[in-house]
Image (cartoon, rainbow, N blue to C red; front, top):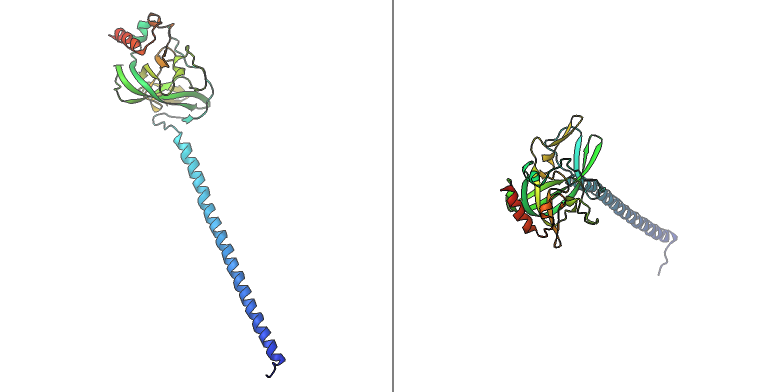
Length: 253
């Protein structure tokens, strides 16, 4: 067999070398393409991820915001998860039993507490903490609410589940699931808090409200009855909500 010439071996080496270079270049381009593709995917995911986070935060924040349609000025309100234990707002009027039923013409209804949430109100630079309860009405003794209706009621203090019940602050004992008889005022255009031109209309917060934290409610809790026995002396030994119901009907007839 005729042997190859040196030139032929050189040509074979050149062809193999060029082919290997072509394969290496192609492999490198493929890797580069894959890297660019991965980098592009990461950028796309980041562009999607961060706006989603901002949207989630915005929606979560707005879910807790209470829309104040009538109020004017530098005022805002929102539901909060945690709140300080605050002193309850009390009425300064000294009223006897008859006056409590007749003077303020309160709406009086029996119902069950379905929800309670604390709120933070800011009026100019002042911060006020309160709570709003949702009560499902069962019976109506006086007023315009109806059985089966779910009403909202502004509570003149915050509600704290972990605290022991305090009978001297009856309404502060309000808890989800409790039955009770509630004496409430209905808010209208004349129900507002004003400070330096800023006005918070209470209708923006709830339909009804308690005048103070202890005289205007009778709460049933695990077989016990919580109410202001100092004010309602004639029924201070009452232990059942049905007995309070009979008493109230007599007082408003």
